[in-house]
Length: 233
Image 1 (spheres, rainbow, N blue to C red):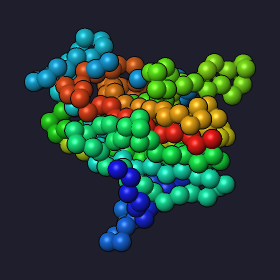
Image 2: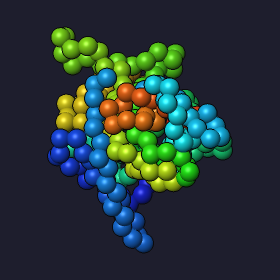
Image 3: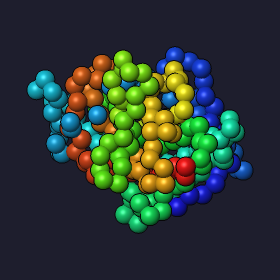
Image 4: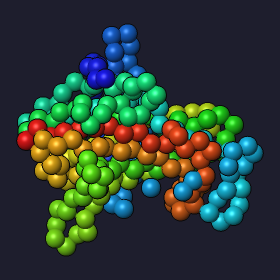
């Protein structure tokens, strides 16, 4: 279910950082996120969890909060209000292939904001978020802006270290008509017309800032959320 909220995104022209500001009638909350994006997503309950190098660390349980998911889009350089999306009973997905969020014909970009959480008692981890798009057939949607550049089929966002028992807000622009410092993303014209597509957001914990040592997540059931969209024309 989509609900309009009085909130705005504040895009910061920094090389690899984004600041999100959200406001409501009762107050204002500023949420800051340090993230890096590349053009390029491995995961034991009770006690410890394994690392790629064989070492062990405290139990890890990362997740995506289904009650902290909002979207907005831009048409003719005008941004829509921020829409908070509430999950259906049972959590993800938020909607279904027959009830996608409709994107207008001249949509320029789609922003999404969501929250990555870490259960208390675990280890400090480095979350990596991946955003992908899939057709109704299940095949991935790719984008190629230059014949000399390999096709891109996902947006990767490497977040700052996350302490156990805390949460971090992540802002992403997975659909954009023009290139941006955040990286190469899917363009509106890469999406089929009048056909629903599934946006999949997933999070994976890593043990190192270089994101080379993936960790096992003790509860993978909340690592992925899906949201259906459709470009009108």
